[in-house]
Length: 452
Image (cartoon, rainbow, N blue to C red; front, side, top):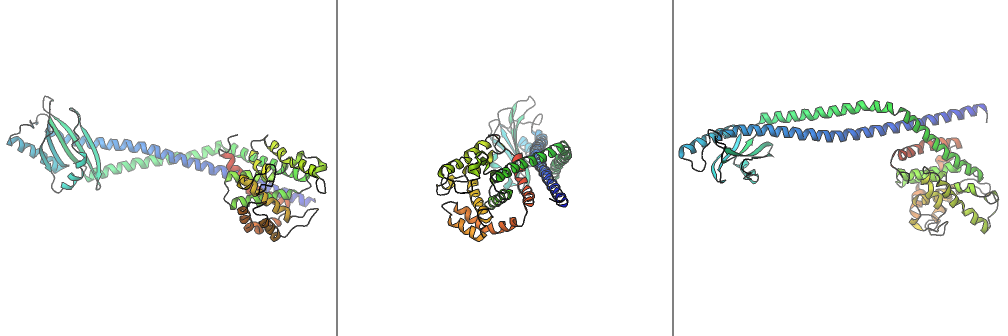
C-alpha cells in the first residue's frame, strides 16, 4: 500500500469513527430527551391531578360555605316549629325562602323532623332544573349531619345541599334543602383561578425539565464517550473474529460484509424487530465461528470431503454454539450459527428441523449466504449472474429455503447486489458500521435478555 493510499485509509477510518461517535451521541441525546419527556408527562399528570383535586375541593368548600351562610336564616332565633306552622309563620318562612330564591338558590324546600315537606319555593322558569336534579335529592342524613352534592348541568354549577335545622336550644326542628346556583361571575372567577393554577404547575414542571437536560447531559458526558468506545470495540471485536474465520477458511472478509448487509436488508424488508436484527447481524458475522476448531486438512481440503470428513466438518456448528456460550453479548447470534444449515424440508443438519420450526434468523441467513456464494467469484468457480442466482433460490424454495422469504428477497436482491458490487472492502466496512450501529445501541440500552 502506497503512502497516499495509507493516508486515505486513515482518513476514512477517522471519518468512520467520527460518524460512529456522532451516531452514539445522537442516540443517547435522543434517549435522554425521550425519558425527560416521559418524566415531564408523568409529573404533569400526577402533580396536575393532585393540584386539580385540591383546587376542586377548595372551590367546593367555598361554594358550600356560601350556601350554608344563606341557609342559616332558617336556624337559631328565626327557627319555627315546622310541624305546627300558623299562617303568620308560614308567610314569614315563605318570604325568607323567596329572598334566597331571588339571590342564588333555584329551589328551597323545608321539611319537618319527620321529613315531611312543609314549604317549597322555586325560582320562576327553573322548574326544569328542579326536575333534572330530582334524582339526587331527598337523601336525608342522620340527625346532626348534612350532605351536599355538586352537579354541572347545562354549563351551570349547581349544589344540592341538605342541612339539619336547629332551634336556639340546638334541637333538631327539621331540614333545609336547596339547589344553590353558582353565579356566572363567581363561576368564571373559579375557572380562571383553576386554569391559572394548572398553567403555573405546567410551566414550573416544564422549566424544571428543561433545566435538568443540560445537567443530566453534563453528568452523562463521560458515559456517552464510554458508550461510543464500547460499541466501537464490540463491533470491531465481532468484525475481527468473523474476518479471522473467513481468512482461515480461504474466504474473504467481503463475504462477511455482504451477507451481513443482505441479511440486514432482508430483515428490514420483512419488518423484523430491532432486537432480532441485532441478533441477525451478529449471527451473520459469526455464522461459521465454529470452523476455528476444524483441522486444516479437512477445512482447507480442495476436493470433495469424504462422508467421514463431512461429519467432522458438521461439528463446526456445535463448536460455534460452544464458543458463543462464553459471551452473553454474542448469545443472540446462536440461532444463525446453530441452524443456518437446516433446510426447509427437514433434510438439513444438525437437528433436521423443518419449516417454521427453524428460527427465523437462520432461515433469513440461509438465503443470503447461498445467494452471495453463487454471485461471488471463488477459486473453484465463476460467479453466477444475479438473475440466475435468484432463479436457483426460487427453484429451491420450499425445499431448501423458506418460500415467503425467498419471495421477498427476490424483489430486492438485484438492487442490493448492485449496491454492494460498487464498494471496495474497506468501504463495505464503513457502510456497515453506519448501518448496524443504531441497532446495537438500541438493544444495548434497553432491557434485552437481562443476561439470561
